[in-house]
Length: 308
Length: 326
Image (cartoon, rainbow over all chains, first blue to last red; front, side, top):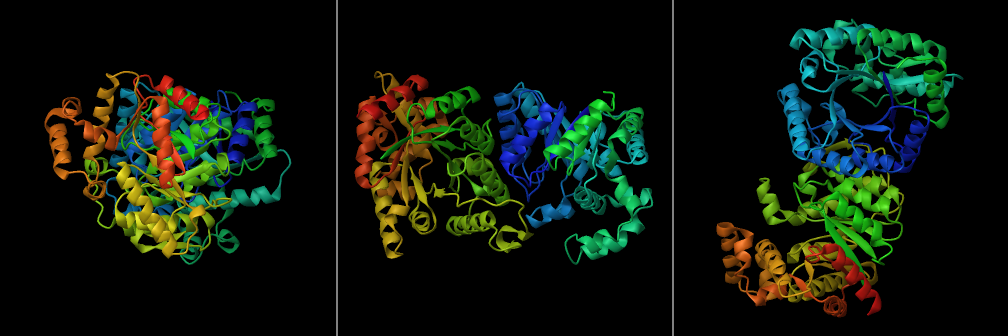
């Protein structure tokens, strides 16, 4: 089992650089750096992170091939790998529909998204293969259409935390192509704590609500969550996510998209995922909120005997 | 006048690292990274390497085109770069080379309007002055960046026609000029006149000249220079040729030769009169003299290379040494 920490690219490049160093010191296997149109440019931030770390793997993503061309994505990886060694992974996916719309990329007008993602993956792989560079390309996925292409990727990162949803996703992948990718990961807003900080818990609820509200209708329907989210989704069309919208979302919905555990509860959860075939867990923001929250995760993974 | 060194995204990482590791020690004022579209290295990531590997030199992108990527990508990459070493990053923007853009099927209709809008929008994004941001022409709607630059990132424009030069005079912090000396002289004159008309101070504008430069060790190095001219001359807009007083038919011949026989063969027919127009070449001291000649025209910063010479590392070191000692 590999453990990763997703860094918050709303923070400055130097802050992300410092947090990458800490993640490496804490013995984590990966840091993941996302690339959203409203945040700092992931390859530049990854370069800064790589320059002050030694061996931690750096995941770029999720990166949308509808925002950057496969050629540009492959070139970023080329520069990073040639400069800092083969310790970079890439995760591609459609990207946040609403955020992309704000910068002129309309996913609603893009047809055959799963097959276009697959051809982007193949183009990136081919460019890197010709340059004799190695990387793993993951698919960031949630809904059934995307999951059906997952076995053509090196790995799949599932954007929910509930074991039953993970199990369903793996069954969907298996049914479509008869196999699952070599690497299966879970990527979810997380807060693993020793001393509960209500402020960070609040951030976790917002982060988790954002994922739930943007989740695929098919997934929500499958797990009977769609109706519970309807009032919040209606309000979200009128204003950005705020406390009153958050209060419209039942806790059991939020829980399915986040990892919120005391340190001593973490091993059992990891074992559950491991039994399903998960080999990679990415603890997303707010776990990287501070040096203390990163330490709390690291302690939980080492002291609580979370098996790798 | 300052001397900087130039590299491009066509370079290998080894070469980029070699230059980066020595830029400060060799005394270069800056390092400019040019984007060769479709080449192995990625412009923003490559620039981050240079910023991370230097302490003093100003590091600029010279230039990238906003038409080949989303404008918000340019904005957020620039902020991330500026944060690596505040105050050292400079962003150079250009429409893009005629041949490069044609090769990826892009044709620009109104370049002046596009550049004005781009620079304006970038500055608004960087300062978060008006939120949310909207610009129908660039398809930006209700955009709220989660980043902000600590101070203004200098914007340079790598442009050539009279309209774009006039725009640079008006909205940019500097211009990166390339082309024959007579053209550069005219371009500087045009920009200074425009700035004077707008009552903008000369001191707040930086003129950079970046032409292909080759340190000649013997006559055979001229072959390399002629190859460079075969490529560069073909990409020079007619407006520049006119200002420089170069016969269009001379360039048509070069373009046709390149199209029919390739750069290697075309370079054999490059007349000497074109060589000096499009490429700076000579021994290190002669190149220093040529650069200082530009200073008299008003140029603040000259960029050495590429292709530098047959042995680029030796050429860069020799040039830096000659600059310091003259």
